Amino acid sequence: MKEILTGELFDLTADHTLAQEYLKKTTYPWEAIPQIADWIRAIGATLDPEAYDKAGEDVWIAKSAKVFPSAYIGGPCIVGEHAEVRHCAFIRGSVLIGAGAVVGNSTELKNVILFDGVQVPHYNYVGDSILGYKSHMGAGSITSNVKSDKTLVTIKGAENETRIESGLKKLGAILGDGVEVGCGSVLNPGTVIGQNTNVYPLSSVRGVIEKNSIYKHAGEVCEKR
Image (cartoon, rainbow, N blue to C red; front, side, top):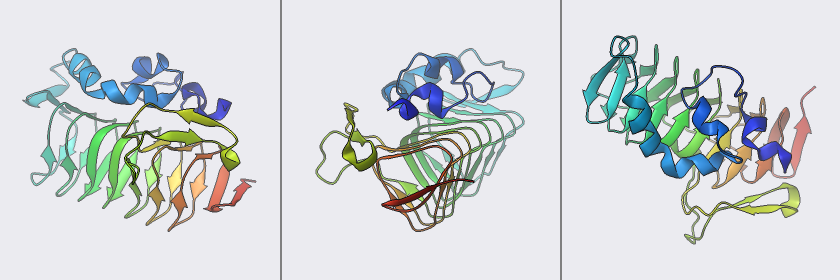
């Protein structure tokens, strides 16, 4: 499944994330998820103190970022330049919030990479996931990161023709650059959505969705024109 390769989901030739070099080392993007915490600690220590404040143990916040007083930010975490972390956001740790990203009211993040310009602005849960450049999750849409039977997550291609074992018990969703997820949608464990794809509101999404698609519901995915 070529479409799930790291280089197919994200444009890593452009400067759209501090994690650019980190992700280039992976074949599949979920390979980066287990080591996000260690990577943040390492890269955080190299950040320019003229541009970033050390706001707690392993927490770096850009001076240009806007963080509401009611937000909770646990380390390790980096909040990028001009990002916005709004009222009652809950950042549980192991989180990179990219430049210009928006983390909204009551949104919860855990062990994730948000590329620059990502928006999770209203009541979202994102865990053990990677969201590509300028991807957006509508109000109330979430990633589900653990299977109900607690077995390891498998990435499944169209009609289950191809299966790749992630080796991870916890794996949410991988969103390519420019993905739009409609309000109230659930992205099931191991969901991979290709670049510039739109997901209808109230969808339950699983498996691999090709880039430049419109996901209406299971079994009805059409190409963008």
